Amino acid sequence: MRVEINQLNYMNNSIFFKRSVALILLATLGGFTGSCKKEASEEEKKEPKPGSEVMVSQNAITPEEFPDNLNIDGFHFPEDSLKIYQWLADQDTIQINKHAWGIWAGLTEKSNQVYKGDTLLVYETWLGVKELADMSANSDKEGGCTKTKTERAHLSIPKQFIHAQVFAKQKAVIDTTFNVFESVSYNPAAACFATSNLIFNQSVLDSYNKTDGIGKIPDFPANSITTKPVYYAGKPDDNGLIRVPVWPGMPSKPQVFGYDDWHTYVYVDINNSQPERTLVPVVGENPSGEQITNASCNVSDFINFKLDSAAAAYLNEHQDKGNDNFKAGDLVFLVAMHVGTKEISNWTWQTYFWSYDPQNPFFPSSKFQADLRPGIITGAAANYSVSSCYAMVWPNQPISGGTDKNATPIVSFNPYLEGSFGPNVFSVKNNFRKDFQYGIQTNCMTCHALATAKGNVGYATDQYIDMKDMSLFKNQVQLDFAWSIQGNINTNK
Image (cartoon, rainbow, N blue to C red; front, side, top):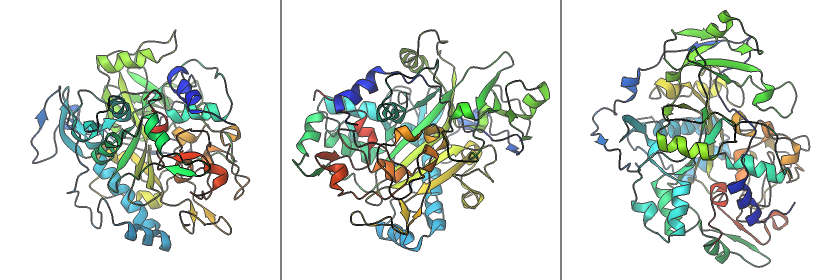
């Protein structure tokens, strides 16, 4: 299928993804249990990191650097690429996952920035891609290097849901609401690179085109980080409980497995009045009072924030008619986050999701990975699980000239972002594993390798992608694995 950039941007700006892919990473099948801890109080959450001087300003949020003082043994950012490549050569999943946890620790460290009474986490201070694209449109090359911001990054429908519609040749999706939103952001190094190069402008991207060849933008600097936090917005019932669908683990056989297939729920208490308990998720639609109680957790078990009037107004502009309006004070919960770092050529990829039992999470995470989580990660941040993919397959393959032959797949996805993808979404044929046809058989690196300015190469399930494959990339401009650029191109600049 050929999808030109103007069609994708039309979709990005005009199609409201109506499917309620309620990506809530809260728990799992009723037969399993986990711990729901009452975390720090709201006042404790607002305390800055020890020894820091808080910039209490609601008019200026200064993007902060990734912390360099985490005191995690053996962790460095950016790590020497040669060391990471050695981990890959050794298939050292211990070091890979330790590094992924170090990234999470830094992202969720408290910053020195305060917005409307909330001490922001480091990742929350970073400039959003919409802001960076606007700066590029205005030829503001210094913006990403010097600008502060005045509010949280705007929430919007996840672009990959829109891309999935296009790749699947869907002209309409029938459903009523959506509850999941993203706010893609770049750390200071990536933001400065983006505006310095005006990388969101169509004319700039066109300048890298090579007729009958493969064009590519310059590489992001090695200390770049891109984040895609995903939030769930729900409404409480009369008892102050928000029912949220939760991940029950992998299905018995590969299939489309979005939230509406799970039929598994927890209840989040907006008053933080739940005692510590072992969570037993509700399975089905008509639970008893006792079942609801046993499935109830606290808002403070999540990284979360309350919408202000500006954020609520922005979301209401993107809602389907007939739905309840968002309003200031409504809660949104961080349920998932994709993270890429440019420490190696193909970036490192790690994805995080909320888990009802963070010590024993379901695939695509594992107890093995949970046991590597450093003690510095505490509170709500400790309730998230990790899945990492620093390669597409084992053994790791070169940028070009590699092969899938005799390889072992590395399946790493986020249930709340890719779980609902079916065979019609994946237009790139998989000759490595013909049975890989679903979102639960994907790999972040494989998919991001296909990011181009035209955006019409498609998505793929886990397989090796040769970055010089002319059958895929002829007359394309590769975006250095950044789908976030493609979704925000200034087509008239």
